[in-house]
Each structure stands twice: as C-alpha cells, then as structure tokens.
Amino acid sequence: MRNIIALASISFVLAFTPALATAEPSSDIRVYASRTDSAITEGETTLDVDPDVAYAAASDYSRWTAMFPTIRQVVVTRRTADDAHVTFVHAAGNRDNLHFRNRPAMRMVWFEDTGGRAEVWAEIVFGPGDVPGTTRVHSRLFADVHGLASLVVSDRKLRGIREQRVRDDLTHLRSYFSGNLTATR
Image (spheres, rainbow, N blue to C red):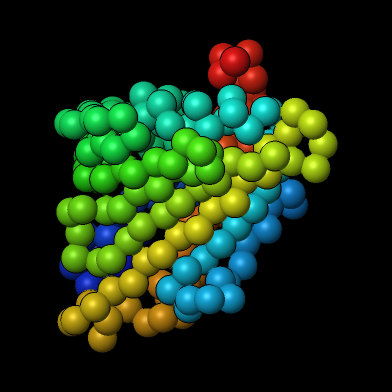
C-alpha cells in the first residue's frame, strides 16, 4: 500500500496488514486474478478450525490486532448488528477508516475503505472445508484508482499490490488460527 501512496500521494489503505509486513508465504495458499473483474484479486486457503469459529473470530474486530501484525489499535466508532464503522491504527501511525457490512448467514466479513481516494473493498468468506472441522477461506479484494492517480499507478503495479495483500492476509489468518485454536473456541 505504501507504494501507491508514495507514487500517487493517495490514501489507499486497508484494514489488513500493509505490504511492508510481508508474511512467510505458504504453499497452501492460492492467489489468482478474478475471472469477472480485472480490478479484483482472489485467494483461498484452508484453516484447521470450524467455519463458525473462524467467522466469529474474524468478525470480532478487537482480535484483528492479533491476526494482523501491524494493526496496533481497533476503534469501533459505530456498530449496529452486523454493520460497523471501524478505525484500525497501524504501527506506522496510519489509520484505516472502514465500513463493515458483514453477512453472518454466509460467514462473510465485508468492508470498504471510506477514507481514501481509491475505491477499495474486500470480502472474506469462511466456508466449510473438505474435511470436517476445517474452513475454506475465500478472499476477494477490489482495488482501483481513478483520476490523476490512474496515470501514475499502472494496472500491473496495482495488481501486484493486490496479489501481495491477499497472500499476506491469508498467510496471517493461517498463522493466527494454527496458533490460537483454543482461544477462538
């Protein structure tokens, strides 16, 4: 994310870990371009935890400081059922202002960035895995820039940033749930 800010002087920030906090890659993570939209990158992995447990933990924003290493503070400014406005404060001091519209029936965490000049939204679905007691995580990240920023940031560069973000986020989720199974039940 810092690459876009440096190149285009725009605020392009997500609640997930910045690209600077790259996680150790896992061969159990698949990242790919969406078949339906060139501004979407998708990814998937499997967690060794029940889908309901994984969704409950991911929709508890206070746990994001443990899930994603650069998030230092979580401030919920408004919450009504599955709709919330949340600010994540990162170690570097930057803030992400996000609007969550979760869908519990689908075990989907969905949010959009409300403070940037880029259009950014993400969804993470925690579905049943192939083996009982496991979760198939499917992530979709939409990020696109418009106006002057689109002249400075190429589609290729943006795609690379999205791919790294999805890979890092799924890696951090795998790490969190592999080490915190008892804490999430």
